[in-house]
Image 1 (cartoon, rainbow, N blue to C red):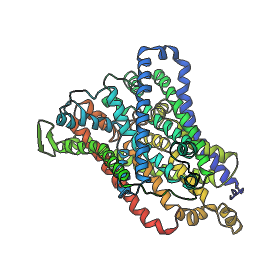
Image 2 (cartoon, helix red, strand yellow; image 1 turned 90 degrees about the horizontal axis):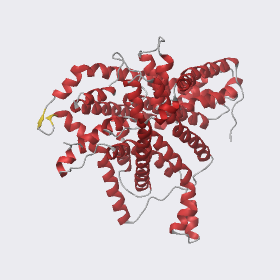
Image 3 (cartoon, one colour; image 1 turned 135 degrees about the vertical axis):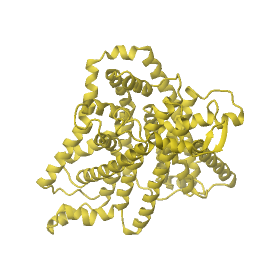
Length: 533
Protein backbone atom coordinates (compact mmCIF):
# COMPACT_ATOMS: atom_id res chain seq x y z
CA UNK A 1 0.00 0.00 0.00
CA UNK A 2 1.34 3.40 -1.03
CA UNK A 3 2.21 5.87 1.72
CA UNK A 4 1.08 9.48 1.72
CA UNK A 5 3.56 12.14 0.76
CA UNK A 6 4.85 13.82 3.93
CA UNK A 7 5.79 17.06 2.20
CA UNK A 8 3.65 19.91 3.51
CA UNK A 9 4.65 23.50 2.71
CA UNK A 10 3.77 26.36 4.98
CA UNK A 11 1.33 27.65 2.34
CA UNK A 12 -0.44 24.31 2.27
CA UNK A 13 -0.64 24.28 6.06
CA UNK A 14 -2.17 27.77 6.09
CA UNK A 15 -4.81 26.69 3.55
CA UNK A 16 -5.67 23.62 5.64
CA UNK A 17 -5.99 25.72 8.78
CA UNK A 18 -8.28 28.17 6.96
CA UNK A 19 -10.43 25.27 5.75
CA UNK A 20 -10.58 23.87 9.28
CA UNK A 21 -11.65 27.27 10.65
CA UNK A 22 -14.30 27.45 7.94
CA UNK A 23 -15.76 24.08 9.00
CA UNK A 24 -15.78 25.11 12.62
CA UNK A 25 -17.74 28.23 11.69
CA UNK A 26 -20.30 26.52 9.47
CA UNK A 27 -20.72 23.15 11.23
CA UNK A 28 -19.56 23.07 14.84
CA UNK A 29 -20.48 26.54 16.07
CA UNK A 30 -24.05 26.55 14.64
CA UNK A 31 -24.62 23.14 16.23
CA UNK A 32 -23.22 24.33 19.54
CA UNK A 33 -25.48 27.38 19.35
CA UNK A 34 -28.54 25.17 18.93
CA UNK A 35 -27.50 22.83 21.73
CA UNK A 36 -26.85 25.80 24.02
CA UNK A 37 -30.59 26.49 24.00
CA UNK A 38 -31.03 23.32 26.02
CA UNK A 39 -29.58 25.16 29.03
CA UNK A 40 -32.25 27.84 28.64
CA UNK A 41 -35.10 25.39 28.17
CA UNK A 42 -36.99 23.21 30.61
CA UNK A 43 -36.07 20.02 28.80
CA UNK A 44 -37.97 17.78 31.25
CA UNK A 45 -41.16 19.76 30.62
CA UNK A 46 -40.70 19.35 26.87
CA UNK A 47 -40.07 15.60 26.90
CA UNK A 48 -42.89 14.97 29.40
CA UNK A 49 -45.40 16.94 27.35
CA UNK A 50 -48.15 14.60 26.06
CA UNK A 51 -47.75 15.92 22.48
CA UNK A 52 -44.03 15.16 22.54
CA UNK A 53 -44.56 11.67 23.98
CA UNK A 54 -47.18 10.84 21.34
CA UNK A 55 -45.04 12.30 18.53
CA UNK A 56 -41.99 10.34 19.72
CA UNK A 57 -43.96 7.10 19.87
CA UNK A 58 -45.50 7.74 16.45
CA UNK A 59 -42.09 8.51 14.94
CA UNK A 60 -40.42 5.41 16.35
CA UNK A 61 -43.26 3.02 15.42
CA UNK A 62 -43.87 4.34 11.90
CA UNK A 63 -40.15 4.68 11.16
CA UNK A 64 -39.34 1.19 12.41
CA UNK A 65 -42.13 -0.40 10.36
CA UNK A 66 -41.25 1.62 7.25
CA UNK A 67 -37.52 0.91 7.60
CA UNK A 68 -37.99 -2.85 7.92
CA UNK A 69 -40.25 -2.97 4.84
CA UNK A 70 -38.01 -0.61 2.86
CA UNK A 71 -34.82 -2.58 3.53
CA UNK A 72 -36.49 -5.94 2.81
CA UNK A 73 -37.98 -4.71 -0.48
CA UNK A 74 -34.69 -3.09 -1.45
CA UNK A 75 -32.75 -6.29 -0.68
CA UNK A 76 -35.13 -8.45 -2.73
CA UNK A 77 -34.99 -6.02 -5.65
CA UNK A 78 -31.18 -5.83 -5.52
CA UNK A 79 -31.00 -9.63 -5.52
CA UNK A 80 -33.38 -9.77 -8.51
CA UNK A 81 -31.31 -7.27 -10.47
CA UNK A 82 -27.78 -8.35 -9.57
CA UNK A 83 -28.17 -12.09 -9.02
CA UNK A 84 -30.17 -12.99 -12.13
CA UNK A 85 -29.68 -12.79 -15.89
CA UNK A 86 -32.53 -10.31 -16.19
CA UNK A 87 -32.46 -8.00 -19.20
CA UNK A 88 -32.58 -4.20 -19.10
CA UNK A 89 -31.01 -3.99 -15.63
CA UNK A 90 -29.79 -0.44 -16.22
CA UNK A 91 -33.27 0.74 -17.21
CA UNK A 92 -34.80 -0.89 -14.13
CA UNK A 93 -32.20 0.74 -11.88
CA UNK A 94 -32.82 4.16 -13.44
CA UNK A 95 -36.60 3.85 -13.14
CA UNK A 96 -36.69 2.68 -9.52
CA UNK A 97 -34.34 5.50 -8.48
CA UNK A 98 -36.36 8.29 -10.13
CA UNK A 99 -38.14 9.06 -6.81
CA UNK A 100 -34.76 10.21 -5.48
CA UNK A 101 -35.08 13.23 -7.77
CA UNK A 102 -38.20 14.69 -6.14
CA UNK A 103 -38.77 16.11 -2.61
CA UNK A 104 -40.06 13.82 0.12
CA UNK A 105 -43.20 15.95 0.41
CA UNK A 106 -44.00 14.97 -3.18
CA UNK A 107 -44.13 11.31 -2.17
CA UNK A 108 -46.78 12.11 0.43
CA UNK A 109 -48.73 14.17 -2.09
CA UNK A 110 -48.43 11.43 -4.74
CA UNK A 111 -49.87 8.95 -2.27
CA UNK A 112 -52.82 11.27 -1.66
CA UNK A 113 -53.40 11.57 -5.42
CA UNK A 114 -53.36 7.79 -5.72
CA UNK A 115 -55.06 6.63 -2.53
CA UNK A 116 -56.72 9.71 -1.03
CA UNK A 117 -60.46 10.29 -0.80
CA UNK A 118 -60.68 10.93 -4.57
CA UNK A 119 -57.43 9.23 -5.56
CA UNK A 120 -56.95 7.42 -8.84
CA UNK A 121 -56.67 3.98 -7.24
CA UNK A 122 -59.33 4.76 -4.62
CA UNK A 123 -61.90 5.48 -7.34
CA UNK A 124 -60.71 2.67 -9.58
CA UNK A 125 -61.03 -0.04 -6.93
CA UNK A 126 -63.76 1.69 -4.86
CA UNK A 127 -61.63 1.58 -1.69
CA UNK A 128 -63.31 2.89 1.45
CA UNK A 129 -60.36 2.85 3.87
CA UNK A 130 -58.50 6.11 4.54
CA UNK A 131 -54.81 6.36 3.67
CA UNK A 132 -54.26 9.26 6.08
CA UNK A 133 -52.43 8.64 9.34
CA UNK A 134 -50.17 5.75 10.24
CA UNK A 135 -50.68 3.76 7.02
CA UNK A 136 -50.01 6.77 4.81
CA UNK A 137 -46.88 7.78 6.71
CA UNK A 138 -45.48 4.24 6.49
CA UNK A 139 -46.23 3.75 2.78
CA UNK A 140 -45.02 7.25 1.89
CA UNK A 141 -41.81 6.72 3.86
CA UNK A 142 -41.19 3.45 2.04
CA UNK A 143 -41.66 5.20 -1.31
CA UNK A 144 -39.24 7.91 -0.19
CA UNK A 145 -36.49 5.71 1.26
CA UNK A 146 -36.74 2.52 -0.82
CA UNK A 147 -34.62 3.75 -3.80
CA UNK A 148 -31.80 4.91 -1.51
CA UNK A 149 -31.79 1.60 0.39
CA UNK A 150 -31.77 -0.23 -2.94
CA UNK A 151 -28.66 1.61 -4.16
CA UNK A 152 -26.83 1.00 -0.88
CA UNK A 153 -27.61 -2.74 -0.91
CA UNK A 154 -26.84 -3.00 -4.62
CA UNK A 155 -23.40 -1.52 -3.92
CA UNK A 156 -22.85 -4.20 -1.26
CA UNK A 157 -23.86 -7.02 -3.59
CA UNK A 158 -21.67 -5.75 -6.44
CA UNK A 159 -18.49 -6.36 -4.44
CA UNK A 160 -19.41 -9.66 -2.81
CA UNK A 161 -16.94 -12.45 -3.54
CA UNK A 162 -18.29 -15.67 -5.03
CA UNK A 163 -15.27 -17.78 -4.01
CA UNK A 164 -16.68 -18.85 -0.57
CA UNK A 165 -19.84 -20.08 -2.30
CA UNK A 166 -17.77 -22.21 -4.64
CA UNK A 167 -16.08 -23.70 -1.58
CA UNK A 168 -19.51 -24.48 -0.14
CA UNK A 169 -20.37 -26.41 -3.29
CA UNK A 170 -17.21 -28.47 -3.02
CA UNK A 171 -17.92 -29.17 0.67
CA UNK A 172 -21.60 -29.87 -0.08
CA UNK A 173 -22.79 -27.09 2.24
CA UNK A 174 -26.21 -25.93 1.09
CA UNK A 175 -29.34 -24.05 2.08
CA UNK A 176 -29.56 -22.61 5.59
CA UNK A 177 -26.11 -23.84 6.56
CA UNK A 178 -24.56 -21.93 3.65
CA UNK A 179 -26.56 -18.83 4.56
CA UNK A 180 -25.31 -18.96 8.16
CA UNK A 181 -21.71 -19.73 7.25
CA UNK A 182 -21.17 -17.33 4.32
CA UNK A 183 -24.02 -14.96 3.50
CA UNK A 184 -24.96 -13.77 6.98
CA UNK A 185 -21.40 -12.92 8.17
CA UNK A 186 -20.82 -10.84 5.00
CA UNK A 187 -24.16 -9.03 4.97
CA UNK A 188 -24.76 -8.57 8.70
CA UNK A 189 -22.71 -5.41 9.32
CA UNK A 190 -23.42 -3.70 5.97
CA UNK A 191 -27.15 -4.34 6.35
CA UNK A 192 -27.10 -2.94 9.88
CA UNK A 193 -25.50 0.19 8.44
CA UNK A 194 -28.15 0.35 5.70
CA UNK A 195 -30.88 -0.14 8.29
CA UNK A 196 -29.69 2.74 10.49
CA UNK A 197 -29.08 5.00 7.50
CA UNK A 198 -32.61 4.33 6.22
CA UNK A 199 -34.04 4.72 9.72
CA UNK A 200 -32.34 8.09 10.10
CA UNK A 201 -33.52 9.20 6.68
CA UNK A 202 -37.15 8.42 7.57
CA UNK A 203 -37.24 9.52 11.22
CA UNK A 204 -35.86 13.00 10.38
CA UNK A 205 -38.17 13.60 7.40
CA UNK A 206 -41.18 15.84 7.85
CA UNK A 207 -42.33 16.02 4.21
CA UNK A 208 -44.26 12.74 4.10
CA UNK A 209 -45.95 12.95 7.56
CA UNK A 210 -46.72 16.65 7.06
CA UNK A 211 -48.50 15.88 3.81
CA UNK A 212 -50.36 12.68 4.65
CA UNK A 213 -50.05 12.18 8.41
CA UNK A 214 -53.21 14.07 9.32
CA UNK A 215 -53.60 13.86 13.09
CA UNK A 216 -50.75 11.32 13.26
CA UNK A 217 -48.04 13.77 14.40
CA UNK A 218 -44.38 12.77 14.23
CA UNK A 219 -41.36 14.48 15.82
CA UNK A 220 -40.20 16.29 12.64
CA UNK A 221 -43.69 17.72 12.13
CA UNK A 222 -43.85 18.75 15.79
CA UNK A 223 -40.45 20.43 15.48
CA UNK A 224 -41.56 22.23 12.32
CA UNK A 225 -44.75 23.43 14.01
CA UNK A 226 -42.94 24.61 17.14
CA UNK A 227 -40.28 26.56 15.24
CA UNK A 228 -42.22 27.90 12.23
CA UNK A 229 -45.64 28.21 13.84
CA UNK A 230 -44.88 28.97 17.50
CA UNK A 231 -41.32 30.35 17.17
CA UNK A 232 -40.35 28.21 20.17
CA UNK A 233 -36.67 27.61 19.40
CA UNK A 234 -36.00 25.92 22.74
CA UNK A 235 -38.48 23.14 22.02
CA UNK A 236 -37.15 22.91 18.47
CA UNK A 237 -33.60 22.48 19.75
CA UNK A 238 -34.71 19.83 22.25
CA UNK A 239 -36.49 17.82 19.55
CA UNK A 240 -33.56 18.32 17.16
CA UNK A 241 -31.21 16.80 19.73
CA UNK A 242 -33.19 13.56 19.59
CA UNK A 243 -32.63 13.40 15.82
CA UNK A 244 -28.87 13.39 16.36
CA UNK A 245 -28.96 10.05 18.20
CA UNK A 246 -29.84 7.69 15.29
CA UNK A 247 -27.87 9.91 12.90
CA UNK A 248 -24.69 9.55 14.97
CA UNK A 249 -25.20 5.77 15.26
CA UNK A 250 -25.63 5.49 11.49
CA UNK A 251 -22.59 7.74 11.00
CA UNK A 252 -20.34 5.61 13.23
CA UNK A 253 -21.52 2.34 11.67
CA UNK A 254 -20.96 3.77 8.20
CA UNK A 255 -17.38 4.69 9.09
CA UNK A 256 -16.66 1.26 10.57
CA UNK A 257 -18.12 -0.58 7.62
CA UNK A 258 -16.32 1.61 5.09
CA UNK A 259 -13.03 0.78 6.70
CA UNK A 260 -13.78 -2.90 6.61
CA UNK A 261 -14.97 -2.77 3.02
CA UNK A 262 -11.84 -0.97 1.98
CA UNK A 263 -9.66 -3.85 3.22
CA UNK A 264 -11.51 -6.52 1.28
CA UNK A 265 -10.97 -7.57 -2.33
CA UNK A 266 -13.48 -9.27 -4.58
CA UNK A 267 -11.68 -12.00 -6.47
CA UNK A 268 -14.60 -13.45 -8.39
CA UNK A 269 -17.99 -11.92 -9.25
CA UNK A 270 -21.26 -13.73 -8.75
CA UNK A 271 -22.60 -15.61 -11.79
CA UNK A 272 -25.90 -13.90 -12.65
CA UNK A 273 -27.80 -17.01 -13.64
CA UNK A 274 -30.90 -18.65 -12.13
CA UNK A 275 -33.59 -21.05 -13.29
CA UNK A 276 -36.38 -19.82 -15.58
CA UNK A 277 -39.11 -19.94 -12.88
CA UNK A 278 -36.95 -17.90 -10.50
CA UNK A 279 -36.14 -15.45 -13.30
CA UNK A 280 -39.85 -15.08 -14.09
CA UNK A 281 -40.69 -14.33 -10.44
CA UNK A 282 -37.79 -11.87 -10.21
CA UNK A 283 -38.92 -10.11 -13.40
CA UNK A 284 -42.49 -9.79 -12.15
CA UNK A 285 -41.26 -8.39 -8.83
CA UNK A 286 -39.08 -5.80 -10.59
CA UNK A 287 -41.98 -4.73 -12.81
CA UNK A 288 -44.18 -4.34 -9.72
CA UNK A 289 -41.57 -2.14 -8.03
CA UNK A 290 -41.15 0.01 -11.14
CA UNK A 291 -44.93 0.52 -11.28
CA UNK A 292 -44.96 1.24 -7.54
CA UNK A 293 -42.46 4.11 -7.88
CA UNK A 294 -43.76 5.45 -11.21
CA UNK A 295 -47.44 5.71 -10.25
CA UNK A 296 -47.00 8.92 -8.21
CA UNK A 297 -45.08 10.49 -11.10
CA UNK A 298 -47.84 9.46 -13.49
CA UNK A 299 -50.39 11.05 -11.17
CA UNK A 300 -48.39 14.32 -11.23
CA UNK A 301 -48.54 14.35 -15.02
CA UNK A 302 -52.28 13.66 -15.17
CA UNK A 303 -53.19 16.15 -12.47
CA UNK A 304 -51.09 18.88 -14.08
CA UNK A 305 -53.00 18.81 -17.38
CA UNK A 306 -56.63 18.01 -16.47
CA UNK A 307 -59.19 20.67 -15.54
CA UNK A 308 -60.36 19.25 -12.20
CA UNK A 309 -59.85 15.67 -11.12
CA UNK A 310 -62.11 13.69 -10.90
CA UNK A 311 -64.90 16.07 -12.01
CA UNK A 312 -63.50 17.11 -15.38
CA UNK A 313 -60.70 15.29 -17.17
CA UNK A 314 -60.44 17.67 -20.12
CA UNK A 315 -56.93 18.70 -21.14
CA UNK A 316 -55.83 22.15 -19.97
CA UNK A 317 -52.68 24.22 -19.48
CA UNK A 318 -54.31 26.47 -16.88
CA UNK A 319 -52.59 24.87 -13.88
CA UNK A 320 -49.18 25.28 -15.45
CA UNK A 321 -49.88 28.91 -16.38
CA UNK A 322 -51.31 29.58 -12.89
CA UNK A 323 -48.18 28.20 -11.27
CA UNK A 324 -45.98 30.62 -13.17
CA UNK A 325 -48.43 33.49 -12.70
CA UNK A 326 -48.28 33.04 -8.92
CA UNK A 327 -44.50 33.38 -8.84
CA UNK A 328 -43.44 29.94 -10.03
CA UNK A 329 -41.01 31.41 -12.53
CA UNK A 330 -39.24 33.38 -9.82
CA UNK A 331 -39.13 30.39 -7.47
CA UNK A 332 -37.77 28.24 -10.31
CA UNK A 333 -35.06 30.82 -11.02
CA UNK A 334 -34.20 30.90 -7.30
CA UNK A 335 -33.89 27.12 -7.21
CA UNK A 336 -31.69 26.93 -10.29
CA UNK A 337 -29.46 29.75 -9.04
CA UNK A 338 -29.15 28.17 -5.58
CA UNK A 339 -28.53 24.71 -7.06
CA UNK A 340 -25.91 25.89 -9.55
CA UNK A 341 -24.04 28.03 -7.04
CA UNK A 342 -24.25 25.31 -4.39
CA UNK A 343 -22.86 22.84 -6.94
CA UNK A 344 -20.01 25.17 -7.85
CA UNK A 345 -19.12 26.15 -4.26
CA UNK A 346 -19.70 22.65 -2.93
CA UNK A 347 -17.68 20.90 -5.63
CA UNK A 348 -14.72 23.28 -5.32
CA UNK A 349 -14.68 23.15 -1.51
CA UNK A 350 -15.18 19.37 -1.38
CA UNK A 351 -12.44 18.87 -3.99
CA UNK A 352 -10.01 21.13 -2.13
CA UNK A 353 -10.79 19.58 1.24
CA UNK A 354 -10.42 16.05 -0.13
CA UNK A 355 -7.09 16.95 -1.73
CA UNK A 356 -5.53 18.32 1.43
CA UNK A 357 -6.91 15.56 3.65
CA UNK A 358 -6.10 12.68 1.29
CA UNK A 359 -2.80 13.83 -0.22
CA UNK A 360 -0.99 15.17 2.86
CA UNK A 361 -0.50 14.07 6.43
CA UNK A 362 -0.65 15.73 9.82
CA UNK A 363 -3.15 16.73 12.46
CA UNK A 364 -4.67 19.41 10.25
CA UNK A 365 -5.43 16.83 7.54
CA UNK A 366 -7.05 14.43 10.01
CA UNK A 367 -9.09 17.27 11.49
CA UNK A 368 -10.23 18.34 8.00
CA UNK A 369 -11.35 14.80 7.23
CA UNK A 370 -13.31 14.56 10.47
CA UNK A 371 -14.98 17.94 9.88
CA UNK A 372 -15.88 17.00 6.32
CA UNK A 373 -17.71 13.84 7.31
CA UNK A 374 -19.29 15.26 10.47
CA UNK A 375 -22.06 16.87 8.39
CA UNK A 376 -23.17 13.35 7.48
CA UNK A 377 -24.44 12.92 11.03
CA UNK A 378 -26.48 16.14 11.13
CA UNK A 379 -30.06 15.85 9.79
CA UNK A 380 -31.32 18.65 7.55
CA UNK A 381 -33.89 19.95 10.05
CA UNK A 382 -31.23 20.23 12.75
CA UNK A 383 -28.75 21.92 10.44
CA UNK A 384 -31.37 24.40 9.22
CA UNK A 385 -32.45 25.32 12.75
CA UNK A 386 -28.84 25.69 13.93
CA UNK A 387 -28.08 28.00 10.99
CA UNK A 388 -31.14 30.12 11.72
CA UNK A 389 -30.08 30.55 15.35
CA UNK A 390 -26.39 31.12 14.66
CA UNK A 391 -26.56 33.45 11.64
CA UNK A 392 -29.65 35.46 12.61
CA UNK A 393 -28.78 39.15 12.64
CA UNK A 394 -25.68 38.71 10.45
CA UNK A 395 -25.24 39.93 6.87
CA UNK A 396 -25.76 36.34 5.62
CA UNK A 397 -29.24 35.92 7.09
CA UNK A 398 -32.20 35.98 4.65
CA UNK A 399 -29.88 35.95 1.61
CA UNK A 400 -29.09 33.52 -1.18
CA UNK A 401 -25.68 33.06 0.43
CA UNK A 402 -27.04 31.32 3.54
CA UNK A 403 -29.19 29.03 1.37
CA UNK A 404 -26.13 28.09 -0.65
CA UNK A 405 -24.06 27.62 2.50
CA UNK A 406 -26.56 25.39 4.30
CA UNK A 407 -27.09 23.26 1.18
CA UNK A 408 -23.35 22.95 0.68
CA UNK A 409 -22.83 21.64 4.21
CA UNK A 410 -26.00 19.53 4.22
CA UNK A 411 -24.82 17.56 1.17
CA UNK A 412 -21.05 17.99 1.62
CA UNK A 413 -20.01 14.58 2.97
CA UNK A 414 -20.96 12.33 0.05
CA UNK A 415 -19.23 14.39 -2.71
CA UNK A 416 -16.26 14.85 -0.38
CA UNK A 417 -15.95 11.07 0.02
CA UNK A 418 -16.20 10.64 -3.76
CA UNK A 419 -13.21 12.95 -4.22
CA UNK A 420 -11.35 11.53 -1.21
CA UNK A 421 -11.62 7.97 -2.51
CA UNK A 422 -10.53 9.08 -6.00
CA UNK A 423 -7.49 10.95 -4.65
CA UNK A 424 -6.57 7.87 -2.61
CA UNK A 425 -6.41 5.77 -5.79
CA UNK A 426 -3.91 8.08 -7.52
CA UNK A 427 -0.17 7.54 -6.99
CA UNK A 428 0.73 9.16 -3.68
CA UNK A 429 4.29 9.94 -4.82
CA UNK A 430 3.23 12.52 -7.40
CA UNK A 431 3.67 15.46 -4.99
CA UNK A 432 7.22 14.35 -4.14
CA UNK A 433 8.07 14.01 -7.84
CA UNK A 434 6.53 17.41 -8.58
CA UNK A 435 8.54 19.01 -5.75
CA UNK A 436 11.76 17.48 -7.09
CA UNK A 437 11.03 18.89 -10.56
CA UNK A 438 10.11 22.30 -9.19
CA UNK A 439 6.43 21.99 -10.14
CA UNK A 440 3.94 23.68 -7.84
CA UNK A 441 0.88 21.96 -6.41
CA UNK A 442 -1.42 24.21 -8.42
CA UNK A 443 0.05 23.01 -11.71
CA UNK A 444 0.08 19.41 -10.47
CA UNK A 445 -3.64 19.59 -9.66
CA UNK A 446 -4.51 21.34 -12.94
CA UNK A 447 -2.43 19.23 -15.33
CA UNK A 448 -2.27 15.81 -13.63
CA UNK A 449 -4.93 15.24 -10.97
CA UNK A 450 -7.85 17.18 -12.41
CA UNK A 451 -7.84 15.39 -15.80
CA UNK A 452 -7.95 12.02 -14.03
CA UNK A 453 -10.93 13.03 -11.91
CA UNK A 454 -13.26 14.67 -14.45
CA UNK A 455 -15.94 12.00 -14.08
CA UNK A 456 -15.80 12.17 -10.29
CA UNK A 457 -16.06 15.96 -10.36
CA UNK A 458 -19.10 15.76 -12.64
CA UNK A 459 -20.79 13.33 -10.26
CA UNK A 460 -20.01 15.64 -7.33
CA UNK A 461 -21.53 18.60 -9.18
CA UNK A 462 -24.61 16.56 -10.09
CA UNK A 463 -25.09 15.36 -6.51
CA UNK A 464 -25.05 18.91 -5.14
CA UNK A 465 -27.39 20.17 -7.88
CA UNK A 466 -30.03 17.45 -7.66
CA UNK A 467 -30.25 17.53 -3.88
CA UNK A 468 -30.31 21.33 -3.77
CA UNK A 469 -33.21 21.38 -6.24
CA UNK A 470 -35.41 19.09 -4.17
CA UNK A 471 -34.38 19.70 -0.55
CA UNK A 472 -36.91 21.06 1.93
CA UNK A 473 -35.72 20.21 5.43
CA UNK A 474 -32.51 22.27 5.70
CA UNK A 475 -33.91 25.39 4.00
CA UNK A 476 -37.41 25.46 5.50
CA UNK A 477 -36.25 27.62 8.43
CA UNK A 478 -34.12 29.95 6.30
CA UNK A 479 -36.18 30.86 3.23
CA UNK A 480 -37.83 34.24 2.69
CA UNK A 481 -40.07 35.68 -0.02
CA UNK A 482 -36.94 36.80 -1.89
CA UNK A 483 -34.96 33.54 -1.83
CA UNK A 484 -37.71 30.92 -1.57
CA UNK A 485 -36.90 27.90 -3.79
CA UNK A 486 -39.33 26.00 -5.99
CA UNK A 487 -39.54 22.96 -3.69
CA UNK A 488 -41.23 25.01 -0.94
CA UNK A 489 -44.03 25.91 -3.36
CA UNK A 490 -45.34 22.37 -2.88
CA UNK A 491 -46.11 23.11 0.77
CA UNK A 492 -47.60 26.47 -0.22
CA UNK A 493 -49.92 25.00 -2.83
CA UNK A 494 -50.92 22.11 -0.61
CA UNK A 495 -51.86 24.49 2.22
CA UNK A 496 -54.07 26.36 -0.26
CA UNK A 497 -55.58 23.05 -1.49
CA UNK A 498 -54.19 23.70 -4.98
CA UNK A 499 -52.97 20.15 -5.54
CA UNK A 500 -52.72 20.62 -9.30
CA UNK A 501 -50.07 23.30 -8.82
CA UNK A 502 -48.20 21.18 -6.28
CA UNK A 503 -48.23 18.25 -8.72
CA UNK A 504 -46.81 20.41 -11.51
CA UNK A 505 -44.06 21.78 -9.25
CA UNK A 506 -43.04 18.22 -8.31
CA UNK A 507 -42.99 17.27 -11.97
CA UNK A 508 -40.96 20.35 -12.85
CA UNK A 509 -38.30 19.54 -10.23
CA UNK A 510 -38.12 15.98 -11.54
CA UNK A 511 -37.69 17.13 -15.15
CA UNK A 512 -34.90 19.56 -14.27
CA UNK A 513 -33.06 16.92 -12.27
CA UNK A 514 -33.44 14.37 -15.07
CA UNK A 515 -31.95 16.91 -17.49
CA UNK A 516 -28.99 17.43 -15.16
CA UNK A 517 -28.49 13.68 -14.79
CA UNK A 518 -28.62 13.26 -18.57
CA UNK A 519 -26.05 16.02 -19.12
CA UNK A 520 -23.72 14.34 -16.63
CA UNK A 521 -24.30 10.96 -18.31
CA UNK A 522 -23.37 12.37 -21.75
CA UNK A 523 -20.26 14.13 -20.43
CA UNK A 524 -19.18 11.05 -18.49
CA UNK A 525 -19.49 9.01 -21.64
CA UNK A 526 -17.07 11.39 -23.35
CA UNK A 527 -14.61 11.15 -20.47
CA UNK A 528 -14.86 7.38 -20.17
CA UNK A 529 -11.85 6.67 -22.39
CA UNK A 530 -9.71 9.52 -21.03
CA UNK A 531 -8.36 7.60 -18.03
CA UNK A 532 -10.39 9.42 -15.36
CA UNK A 533 -10.83 7.93 -11.90
